[in-house]
Image (cartoon, rainbow, N blue to C red; front, top):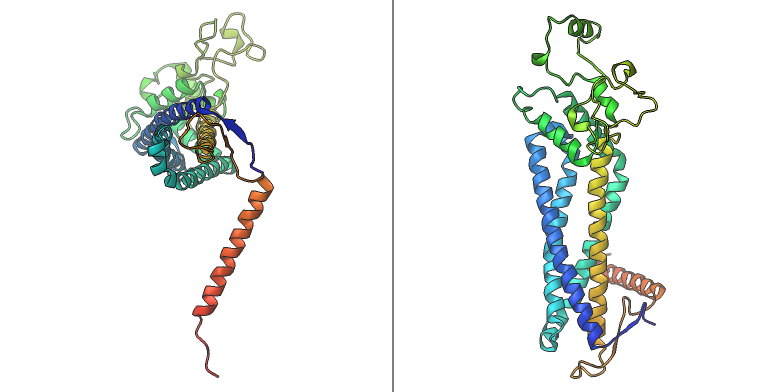
Length: 336
């Protein structure tokens, strides 16, 4: 018995084809956006490789580029097939290409699933990659006059503003590094001199964060300096006060962003493939192909889930036995 059977008349078939056509072309636009995002991300990484680790960090943009290219090609072809399926003459020509396309789409879904699973399975590795890269970018934030690091400050500021995050794990990461260049420090000032001399490594550390960590939605003007000193600010207690800076770390924010993109693409493509399967089967099962207003049935699987899985295993076993027989026939006999 077919799995998830639905009856379709002409009006339902037309609506299904039109809906799928729209979804496919929206998916093409989304694929172009993902591809462009991957290219942009890869260029940015090459220009400023300190942001993330060189080796592991390029895995994400490479996957985005691959998924974007495949999404554009498959969805553009799927949209054309949905449009041609409304014409019986064109459908007869496209009918032979439906199954290969479905197989390619299923393969693409498996690839997307592997990408999503890879993101979750490699979560610890990706977290370490982002942690190391963001740690370096915070360390080089002040080097605006050093060749190769001139735009590090701008890149990190834009990242914190765009992703609404602060620091690597949280805003306290800025307390551990000197993020103000010595060229902007008055070494003749006693306060600056005492702070530098009091540090073992000779760094000018302070409990402050850059302006890009500020939350513009806060009603109070941004407190970005002396965050842990209650006496400097009026009516302020950093232990109980809800700070008006972003509390979320950029490592978590960036990773969640790209993981959600890959997951949403997988869901959208899965819906496209399921709809195209319904459209193709309902056209194939029309009792009278010359009468477009007759009812027909569409399904996802020709048999139940268990029967389909059993048939696939049987075909794989038969294919394996056939290969063994051919190998046995090709083996030369040893003369006794």
